[in-house]
Image 1: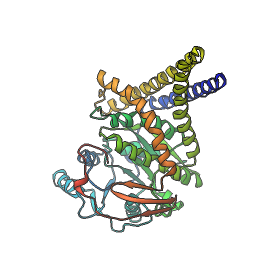
Image 2: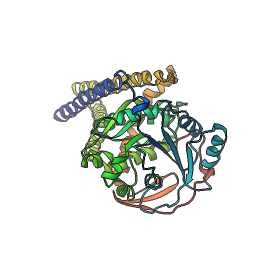
Image 3: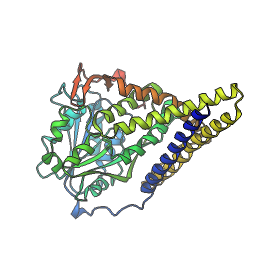
Image 4: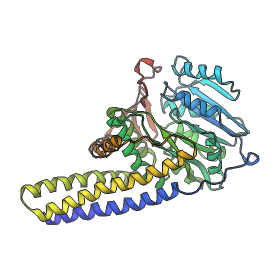
Length: 417
């Protein structure tokens, strides 16, 4: 038992030290002073793409953000899943009141059975881009773009070795539901890995259009489940990279149930498994960071029962160390993101003392549900995305099972889908 306790302690201490260093470097990146943004004269002509299926809780805010971009030359292409989609009502109401003349709304014409609906929507736009368009940006309906959002993406794309620029998500939910807080803590750990492994996030993403001409990215999208996670590998083939833009940490205030979180996080992990070369490292980290704390707790209980107090003390100390490392890693990231959001004039004081207590409790729940989502990503061969079932036989063997228009009856108020 002593040898096992020593092994567990060494692994967990090593994980804590390694994770702390990775978080420190990420926080340092977030804390850098804002860079000078491109002047109007240097801003490339841009197109923004928004793909819609259903009505997200903050869709109107998303549309308002698109209409108020501080950028000289850009247009917006909104691709809605079907003529009967409930998103049409919100978009049409917004268009009547906004007076925006650079927004084009269209329906998804061809719904391929061999890729996701989002990939079909993106391909529809990319294949019909204005020849003068130099960069194409995309966002999700839960992204609320501040006025300089597009300019920050264009600035991130400026270096010659950059093919894509991306931000990332940070959750500040409107309620302290267990699902929302588990997603908050899980995402905080996930985005550190996304930063280090250059995993792009489709919620705030821009590509140079030359990437579409010089690579087979559009052909890959025609057979793919997602559009963003593969970019690291695809850009590397043509000598380009994904650039992270620290100022584009986008605040998401939606709520989510625990069941919906598990489905969502499993889908995020599936995309990493299918399309990113760092998946073995993501999987290894997930196994080590969930299995070994559990082993430490079990060994602690066994040692107490057997009155083996030296081992119980060692395991207890390691468990406390791991718990403290979660807190000391999360809070610096929270503070760094708050500073970024505050510069944009956004509200950041979302955590009350009671919310903080519930957030700490949610960390333990995250440890329990993460192995389930990880196992789901490893073994699943099918997943549901916005009411559509997809069978997954491989990275480029995606099969949409049965298409049907989105139903408003299935929507959840103020909750992510």
